[in-house]
Image (cartoon, rainbow, N blue to C red):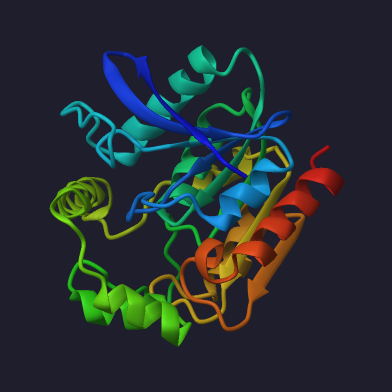
Length: 261
């Protein structure tokens, strides 16, 4: 399904926003790499409702404000975003990696505009005895091997030669990612104790071969948000929406239809 793009302004920031579909509103919160392509995953989701895919402040084509300094700041910004741009509607939040962490940070603060949570390989928690990968010290080849299971996709990632504009956005995204998740690495030590505040239906999706955030974190997240469904996808790395796009979209749509209606 095709999509449109627009720039929305909120609190003095211009935010790049993609939209597709009609009906039940969904908000996809991207991971550290941002969004460069309209994935088949997005097109499939948009068949089930109105999908919004913004670039976070500091990422992609959105403004990069100095006053957003942490994941807590970003969560509060998105609460304003939902209040002021959502026309009073509740949104199904679908977050990947730091976007999943962000979705949880939003929900524990105020879930009045949140109908459900789908957390895809979320960062944000730390489990004793289950070390995470350190993407900040990996080079591009190491990151591809750790995060992508499919050999063809992995090689395409390694061989990719971005143009100048794309390379600039990639650097921008990396700086913003570091600002949000450098210290402590990829988690908030205070988040776990507040996850009991998540009262909306939730599900957790993970790739079994994720070398950044191991799939052993799935049961912990499922316990803390009282997930109604947990799926660990075989032969899949850190980004199920890319490696298992159709299957992941089907899981989201089935969850929204059956559990969060």
